[in-house]
Figure 1 (cartoon, rainbow, N blue to C red):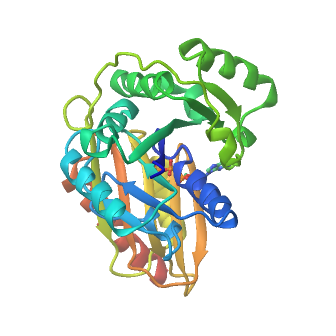
Figure 2 (figure 1 turned 30 degrees about the vertical axis):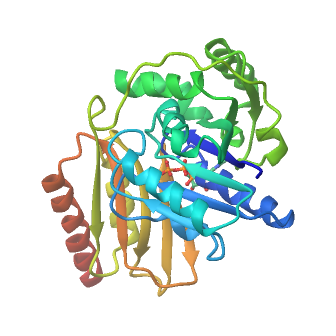
Length: 312
Ligand SMILES: Nc1nc2c(ncn2[C@@H]2O[C@H](COP(=O)(O)OP(=O)(O)OP(=O)(O)O)[C@@H](O)[C@H]2O)c(=O)[nH]1
C-alpha cells in the first residue's frame, strides 16, 4: 500500500497558511486526488474551517496546540482519517505558534510509520512581520526563527506589501538561518504543489522548545457581539488597541449593512470580506497579555459606542 503524503503547513499567526491551503486544495481537486485536512486552532472557535469545501474530509483540533497540549487527540484524528478514507495526501495546518518539529514528531508516531510519509514541512513567513520581528517578545522571535530553521520549504509571503529592493535582504537573512530549505517568494501563497515536494531530505536539527502554554504568554479570547456594530467605532478601537494583539479573525455585522463580513487582521492590516452566509458575529483574538476582563469591557464599549452613534 502506498503511504499517504503529509504536508505540514507551519508559520506565524496570519502569515498565510489558510491561503496556501486553499490554493493547494484547488490544485489537488484538479488532479482528482483524495486529500484530507487537519486544522489546529488555538481558540475554541474555528473560523478557518469554512475555507475548506464540505467534500474535503476535515478534522479540527481546537483550543490547544498539537505540538503540546493536544497531541493525543491529534493521533486519534489521524488514525480515524486513515481508517475512514483512502487518501493520497493529508495537509496539516498548524496553529501560528506551533513548533514544526513537534508536529512532525506527532506524525512520526510508530502508529503511523507504515501509513504516512511526511513530504515536507512548509513554513510561511509574512515578509513585513519578519522584517519587523524585533518588535515581538523574545520568545516569539525565537519561535519565528525555529519555524524557519526547521522548514524544508520556506515561502516568503505577502511580498506584494514589501518594497522590491528589500526582498534580497530578507531572503539572505532567512537563508542564513536555513540554507538547506527551498526558499520561494510568494503573493497570496501562490505556489505549485510540486514546489512543496521535490525537496532534499533535510537533516532534522535539535530544537529549542517554544510552547504556547509553557514559554509563550499567548492567549486567545473569543467574543460574540449581540448587535451589529458601527464600523467607525470599531476601526477607532483597532487604531488604538495594544500591539500585543497579533491576530484577529471572525465574523462581524455592521450597522451600515445587512451582510455578515469575514474579518481578518494580521500585522496591522484589517480585511473585510462580504459573506454569503449568516454566521454569528464571533471574533477570535490571539495575543500576548490578553486580559479577558479588559477585552470583554472593550468589546462592550464598542457595542455601547455603536448604539450612541446611531442616536447622533
Ligand atoms: N496582501 C497580502 N495579503 C495576504 C497574502 N497572503 C495572505 N494574505 C491575507 O492575510 C490574512 C491572513 O491570511 P491567512 O491565510 O488566514 O493566514 P494564517 O496563517 O492561516 O492565519 P492563522 O491561521 O490565524 O495563523 C488574510 O486576510 C489573507 O487574505 C499576500 O500574499 N498578500
